[in-house]
Structure formats: C-alpha cells, structure tokens
Amino acid sequence: MTVPSSPSTGPRFGWHAFVLLFANPERFMAWSRWAAPIFGALAVAAGGLGLYLGWSAPVDYQQGATVRILFIHIASAWMSEFVYACLAVASLLALVWRQMLADAAAQAAAPLGAGFTVLALVTGSLWGRPMWGTYWVWDARLTSVLALLLIYLAYIALRASMDDETKGGRAAAILALVGAVNLPIIHYSVTWWNTLHQGASVFRSGGSALAPVFYWPAILVALSYMSGFGSLWLVRIRGEVWRRRADAAALRAARG
Amino acid sequence: MSRLSALLARETALAWGRGGGPMVSVGFYAGVATLLPLAIGPEPQRLAAIAPGAAWVALALASLLSLDRLFERDFEDGALDHLALSPTPLELTCAVKCFGQWLATGAPLAVAAPIAAMSLGAPVALTPLIFVCALVGGLAFTFTGGIGAALSLGARRGGLLTAVIVLPLFIAPVIFGGGALAAFETGLPWTAGFAYLCAYAAAFVALGPIFMAAACRNALS
Image 1 (tube, rainbow over the protein chains, first blue to last red):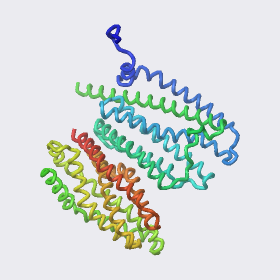
Image 2: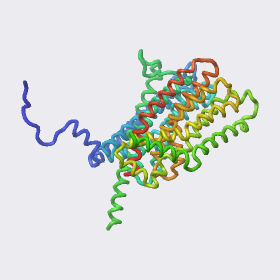
Image 3: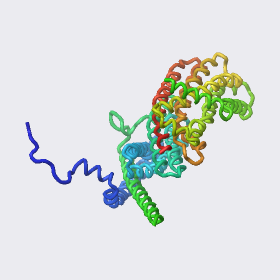
C-alpha cells in the first residue's frame, strides 16, 4: 500500500493547465498570438513543397495531367469533414459549459469548413469532366458532400439571422449537433442509393493504393491544409474575441 | 395522462382549425401535382416514370408549409411560456405538439399522396405502399421539421430559415421512401428502404423532441 509522499500544493499542472489554455481567454490570446503565424508558415512550407512535388510528378498512365487536381481535391474533402467535427465538438462545449471561447471557435470554424467543402466540390467536378465525362453525377460521395455544404450554410444562416447573439449562438450549436447526428445517416443513405466514386484509397487496410510519387504530395498538401486551417481558425477566434471585447467596452461607455 | 390528452386535443384542434388547417397543405400539394405535367409534358410514359418520386418529394415540400405554425404562434402569444412552466417535461410537450401536427396535416396529406401519384400515372398496385410511406414519412418530416421550426424561433425571416435548416435533414427520408417506391415499381425487394424509413422516423420521434425542447428553452430564456 503506497501513500502519496506529499499533498499537492500550489498550482497543479498537467490536465488542468492544459484545459485552461483553451478555457481562459487571457491564456488563449497569449499563446495563439504566436501559434497562428507558426501554423501559417508551416502551411506555406508544406503546401509549397507538396505542390512542387505534385507538379514534378510524372503524369498518371490513365488520368494524364488531371491527376494533379487530386492533390488539391483529396485534402479539401478530408478537411470539409474534419472542420465539421471541430465545429460539432466546439458547439457541444459551448452548449454544455457555456464557454465563450468554444462559441467563438464554432462561429469561426463554419465559414472555413464551408470554404473547404466548396473547394472539394469544385475541384472534384473539374476532375470529373475529363475523367467521368461530366461535371456532376448524383453519386453517393458527391451528394453527401453537397449535403454537408447545405448544413454548413444552414448553420451560417441561422447564426446570422438572430439579433440576440447569445441566443443565435446556442441555437446554431443545437443545429450543429443535429447535423452531427444526421451526417452519418445521410452518408449511408446515399451510399445505399447510388455509388460511382471510388472507395478509400490513401488510408486503408493493406497500405495505400497510391504510388509513393503521388502519395507524398497528397500527404504534404493535407498537412498544409490542416495547419492552414489551424492558423486561420486561431486568427478568426482572436478576431472574434477582440470584437466581443470591443462590444462590451462600447456598452460600458454607453452606460457612462 | 389527462394533461397529455388535453394537450394533444388542443394541438390537433389548433393545427386543424387555425389558418386553413390541412386544406392549405393539401391545396399546395394538389397545385404542385398539377404543375408537374405542365412543365414536363403530358406524355403518359414520361409522367408515369416520375409519378411516385414526384408525389413523394411534393409531400416533403408540402409538409414544410405547416411548420411555421408549430411553435411560432405559441411563442408570440406566450402560450409556449405556459407550456414550459407546466409540470409536463418540455420534451414530452414538443413530442405531443408534433404528433398533433402530424394527425392534422400529415394524415390528410397521406390520403392525398396516392391520389396525386395515380393522377400522374403511377400503377394502382403502388397506392397502398405510397399511403403507408406517406404516413411514416410524414412522421419523420414532422419530427425533423419541428427541430427547424423551434430553432428559428425569434429569428428574422423565420419561415424561410426553417426551410433552409430542414431541407438537408429531409435528404435521408426522401432517399429511403423514394428507394422503396422505385424498388416496388420495378419488382425488386422494397422492404429494405421501407424499413430504413421506419427506422429514421423512429429515431427522430425519439431524438427530435430533445433538440426541440433545447431550442425552445433557448428562445424563451
């Protein structure tokens, strides 16, 4: 039987301090000020290298030069779903703990996610025209990404149409959770309905189906998008925190 | 129990009698079914090919119409505050409201659906399945639609916003019901799609009221 050698005194580090980095606006503003440009630089570096490797890669024996579109396309399709996961988690935290920063994070993530979704749809249809012979097919993957875009737009519209910001934020957070319940159902329903898009080929059991010369540019661009999203997200959250502080200051000034 | 039955009677009576009741939804439905041949052309083969699908998607659109009355009037005249204060959980109250709405507009639309499909040229053998799909689908449309109606309480342009929120949520039930109807028409096994539709309706009869109550509490706070 072991006895703790000494009772813990003073500030505790570890999990508690980690949570405070995100929960306490002061601490968040302190670290995000440096983290945002670092993520941005990482995004530019990884994106530059990835695109260079992508341009210098040999053309695919079936797809020709259009394979280069996929370096941009695959990562933006991943990001469209990843950002929704971030939005849903931030919304849950904002609803349950009434966290101001989580609410600002959800608000900041939505337009970025919608942007990645539009990028995935546009690059996909530009690739589909020479490859499938059409810009758009009512295929399962395409339809579920379109549904994701509609849910992002509903989130942004709901948030924008409420005069009371707090109420609008909470209503939008509830919608984000409804969407999180619905997205898997929509995904499986359209898969059952119609499938043309290929299955998973980069991350799958048995290793990647891509040749290394195509694999590394795709991974580097994905890394670039991920850190670029991190950077833009932090910048947007910081802007939102400043805006809310300015609103509060204006309110105080008006009260005299 | 008597409180719940009184609430159900109130909701059904209000949905039935207020602002034209089911006649507005059924009239809209008949209007869409009339416009379709005018846009597509009166050739029977062409119309018959799209008849079940057209009847089904028009049903989804018609069930959007009555959603703005589900919470909005009660929110404006203060009845929703009273309902939130009652000892009945607000989740249960929202479920009863949606159920009353379904009785007053979903059921009449389910009767109109096979008639509209047949007038567009759907085979008569399909009518029982269209009726049952419309009944179950109406339940799914009302309980997902109620979420949108509750979320847009207090928003500017609430009606349009409700449609923007709700239409993405209609994707899955529209696919399930449409799939069942198309499979039945071509002689394929149709029970899978119908079972998915029932499962979706059951899931949102259970989950929808939780989201609706949260949205109502937020709007009332």
